[in-house]
Image (cartoon, rainbow, N blue to C red):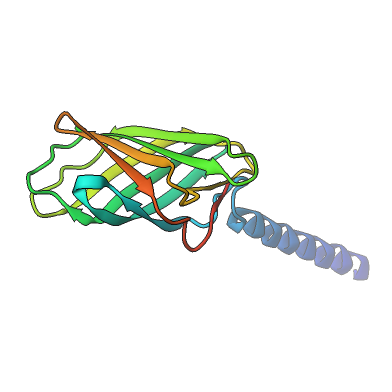
Length: 164
């Protein structure tokens, strides 16, 4: 009878350990998760003015998405959904290699609302460290209502560079 209890106890402990391990694995962050997920940098957009650019990044392997909003730039007219073509270039802090994110998945923007450029897609190298550099590089370009606007980064990303 004692052997049966020992076997039962060992089976219960083994099962409990397996459940705990499965829970730990399920809660662990995915490989290649970008950090930080939110960052901001200051941009000079010429005639439109200056604005911080708020970025939210996600990563799935080598595929990355960055959402871009320029909260200080308000639009004098309404902008239809999917009508702004945007290109964001970030640079690897070790190699100066550019990584380009593009898209035209902007939501509609009402007159007087901040400019929301939407979701940009790009391919990243896992392990790369990307930033704006704040060194006068033209890193954000968008075409809106047939007009091309070029914004130059005037600061590095805050709180830190993106780690992919």
